[in-house]
Image (tube, rainbow, N blue to C red; front, side, top):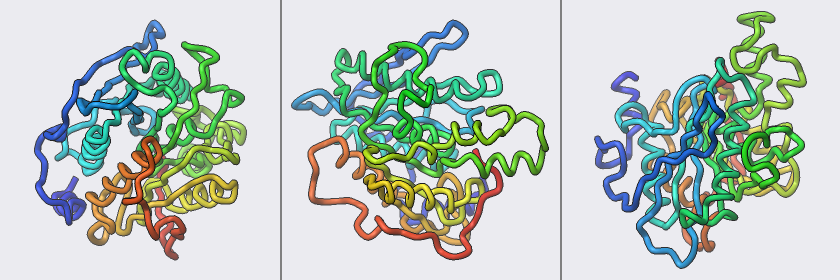
Amino acid sequence: MPAFAWSAALAGVRGWPWHLWNAALRGTRHELTYEDLGGFRGTMYLFLPAKPASGPHPVVLYIHGGSLMHGNGVIGPDWVAPRNWVLARIEGDLVAHGIAFASIDYRLAPRYPWPAQMEDVKAAIRFLRVHGRAWGLDPQRIAVMGDSAGGALASLAGLAGPAAGFDRGPYPGVPSTVAAVVDMFGPVDRSHQAQVWVRRHGRTPNPVFGVFTPSVIRAASAVTYVHPGAPPFLIVQGDSDQVDPPSISVAFYTRLRVAGDPVQLLWIRHCDHEFIARGGPLEPDLARVVQEVASFLERSLLTPRPAGGLSGMEAVTRPSGAQGGKQAE
């Protein structure tokens, strides 16, 4: 990443952190297996707060991005990408408020084609619901958060019920519902990705989804499953996203609102995919983004507090000309 882009992305953030994790974190880390499928062992990285709780801790499950073909559940060093800076500080804020933080590895394509990735996310949620109390967690207060491809998985986790067919694997019959969803830059409508792929590769099967038929696109798109009664959503989107068009997130936000679901949109100016600055400093800056995401999750999982919130951001519309989007992850 060019040095000028990194500097612009961090504009307004004091105290550049060189350490992997927030030094203020207090608690314990655990590496767990949430599923064992023979050739694949699903690893969950769980951080339990040291902060005393009056009852079981709520937990936020983070789902990484990477086009469903790359990445893992370990948040990388701060200096590699602004996304890592944001994620580490969201974790720190949540833990300081007594909320546990978990992340997972999941099966990756092309070795494991779709919907293996979504099945793993659902299995991880069911694992927390079944075994959470043994770790001091509240199985009824599980939120999901993801960026890019992980944002799409998080949105599907919040919307797709058992009829969608993703609830395969261990702990059958255990609900995989969640209490809140944070979607950051997620390709929640796969039709754009399908159009880009077909334009470039014709009918060659996609390494994740295979041949992009209308039924495949519908089944893999979170927008398909929008319904009244969904959990609270926070959608984080940059106006200059060159990977996933900002219009996708705006349409998703609108559809959730029309369904009567609680949804907020955090719109970031001069922001390309994954918090990369484009054309100026981010507005709001990364520190404010951390504050807003953490506050949303804390309000959703803890006793409501009067302070904080996305005041003035609930009815954001896409500025004219902010199309963006080259290839969806």
